[in-house]
Length: 103
Image 1 (cartoon, rainbow, N blue to C red):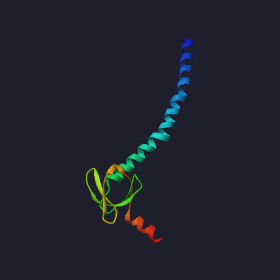
Image 2: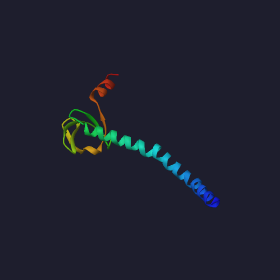
Image 3: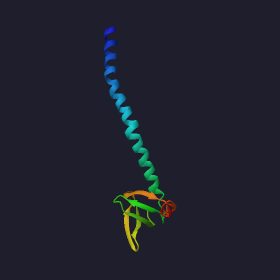
Image 4: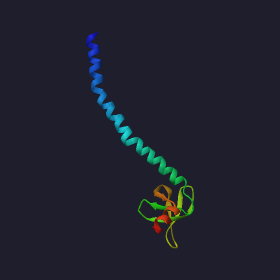
C-alpha cells in the first residue's frame, strides 16, 4: 500500500505544474481578453447618431444612421460610408473630442 501512495504522490507532483500554468494562463490572458470583448460589444450596442467612431482601418467618422448590424458613418463632409458595426474599433464621445480641441 505504501508503494501506491508514493506513485500517486509522484503523479500529483508531475501534474501540478501543468495545472498551475493553465490557471496562470487563464488569469493573465483569457480572462482580461473576455472582459475587453464584453466592453467592446457594449460600446457597439450603445452606438447612436452623432457619436464619433474609429473604424478598424483607422478612419475617424461621425455616425449618421444606426441599423441592427450596420451603421452609416460620415468620414468627410458629404461622404457617407456604410460599415458593419463589428468593424468599429472605438467609440468616442463628442464632448471628449471638443474638450481636446480647445486645449
